[in-house]
Each structure stands twice: as C-alpha cells, then as structure tokens.
Length: 321
Ligand code: A3D
Image (cartoon, rainbow, N blue to C red; front, side, top):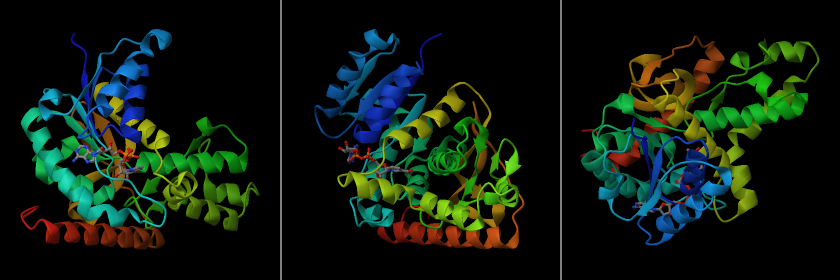
C-alpha cells in the first residue's frame, strides 16, 4: 500500500512542527508548501536529516507551487499571519481571508479528495471561508481549536490536582476565542466531574473559575511570553491528533470546529462541537444537553463567530452567497 500524502500549507512555526510530528509518527510522506522560497525546502531537508537518528521512514519535500500537493490525503492549513502582542485573533481577519482564497483554490485544483484541517486564525471564520473557497464537502473541512483548548484546560487541571494528565478529560465548546465555553460539568478526573471534585474539597469554585479563565486566555498568555509570534507546539500536536484519527479511521470523539446544519439550532456556521472523526471525515456531530447557563455562554460564542463570518462576507461578498 502506498504511503499517505500529507500536505502542509504554510511552513512557519506550526507548519514545521507539524512536519516533524507527522514524520516521527510515520503518518505518511510530507510536503511543505509556502510562498517564501527556501523555507519549506529548508525545513523539509532539516527534518529529513533527522530521520536516520529517529528511525522514521517518510519522504519530505518543500514546494512553492500548489502542483506539489497533488493528490494529498490530508491538508493542514497554517498559511497566513499569526498574532503579535496586543492583537486579537480577529485583527488578522482581512489579511488571512485573502490567504484562504488562494489556499482554497489550490486545494480545489490539486487535492479535492483531501481531509482539510484549518488552523489559521481567526479560526472559526477562516475554516468557514476555506470550505467556501475550496468547495470541498463540509464533512471534509474542519477547524482545529477545541483539541488545543481542551488540552490547555486539562494541563492546568492536572497541575492543580497534581494528578496524571492521562486521568484528566475535559470538554470545551464554542468558538476559538475569548467566548469559548469550557464545560466544567462534562470535564472529569478519572470519571469524577469537576463540580464533584469541588464538593470533595480538591479545589474551590473560585480556583476552578480562575482555571477556566486561564484556559480562555491560553493563547494570549503564550503570545505575551513569546512576543514574536503565537503558540505552535501544542497547536501542531492537536492537529496531528485529528489527522491521525482520519488516516487511521479511529472514530475519535474530538472537539473541532465543524459546520453545523441545524445542530445546536445553528445553520451554515462553523462552531466548536464534539465530532466523531474517521475515514469519512466528520462522521457525526455530537449534540449534548446544555443547562441554561451553558447554553447562554454558547449562544454568546456563536454570535461572536457569526459577527466574524459577516465581516468576511462584507470583504468578499461572493463567499457563501
Ligand atoms: P508563521 O510562523 O508566521 O507561519 C505562517 C506561514 O504562512 C509563514 O511561513 C508564511 O510565509 C506563510 N504564508 C503567508 N501567506 C501565505 C500564502 N498566501 N500562502 C501560503 N503560505 C503563506 O505562523 P504560525 O505557524 O505560528 O501560525 C499560523 C497560523 O495559525 C496563524 O494564523 C495563527 O494565528 C494560527 N494559530 C491558530 C491556533 C488555533 O488554535 C486555531 C493556534 C496558534 C496559531
């Protein structure tokens, strides 16, 4: 059986880390694409030169033309600009929307059967735009945010409780932004929901609220520390988990930005929800019951995503018409 082909559009901080992880996990042959000449070629060669040390078999190449991604099974998109300190994700909208138009056209022409994972911010609007510009079916175009947001939440909780990260399971809904909805009630340590852990005296409601807020601000915390860019190790690891679920038909239940068509009473909008990812892409959208407080938070998050999509439609009126 031929190896899978994984195309990475954008060979920056996340793109390079994606290529390294995909190699280490032997997910397939890897093509790095970027508009900057030399960057994808240099990163591909550098990672290929690490393969004898780590003992992985994968062909790596760098290209500046979309023809190089022909026949890709998975395409992961990080092309665009990241945040600098003081910028919100939404400040990136105009620039990155133009990038999504080019990327969508490239995918439509050369990789129309791929499973496409968008990482470019503002995520929920960019994945919406990428689905429109590529014309791929909605079950084959998803956004990475929830896996990262949940992973940050889990990390903070494992530290708070001094337990293994393996025993923490968390749940984050909604858009990737300040209005994301970390669902405390559905998050557990070894199956014990967080509100029960408060009752058991493991933590306090106030501490939990602080951890929820830190999760919401998780991206900004890293931007503030790095000063020259945004997070890339954890975002790359999160997208690789989604790619692996698709390539290996794992049927993983993962929080992803998926197109809703009636679920959660939302139409034609990408929102972070739990989905099943397998060989058919997004195979199922999981609708969970929300209490009134959770529903209100989700509604606020959906409104903010809708605002961003409307801003995209103003800049590119033919999108989503
Ligand atoms: P960076 O290291 O700047 O890489 C972006 C790459 O895109 C650069 O190599 C550029 O040359 C390239 N590029 C720019 N325009 C184009 C184009 N038209 N076609 C192809 N390539 C192009 O950024 P990064 O890797 O740190 O981040 C990439 C994106 O991911 C940014 O938009 C971030 O905001 C976003 N991001 C999202 C998350 C989520 O959780 C959703 C987390 C972290 C970063």
